[in-house]
Image (cartoon, rainbow, N blue to C red; front, side, top):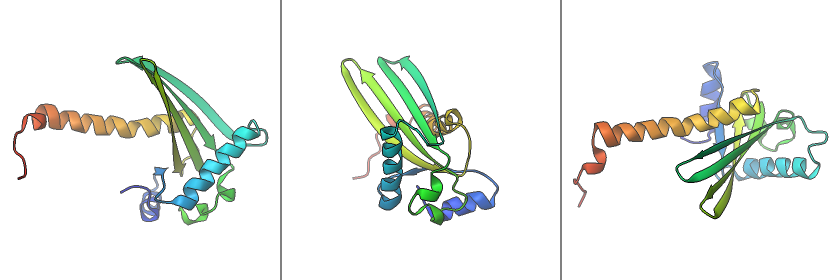
Length: 153
């Protein structure tokens, strides 16, 4: 499904909010969001209406911190934003993960119709993985999918 304008429009028509990942499938929007946050960092957030939150997790042999920035006044200045029904905010999530002595940093970008806090939107972005994980658990445990030796060809 992904980040598609028709999906956003349908969600808004149902009086709900969306939080959609923006990747290179929308290169102009993706680049514009990256630039916005890069400029905000360079300005030390002076003059930017941005909320921030950070969470930490430790377990399973790894240490992970997640940082989330939400731009509330950015939409009017983001090229291509007018094409998205109900778009209110842009979001950047930075995940820093350390396993043993190796640290990796990943940035993900989102658009949202919600004007929720950074904590709310970070939690919302994490809910996707919770659903996916629980569905895989169901397939693996209840249906014993991993034990299946049925193979195509």
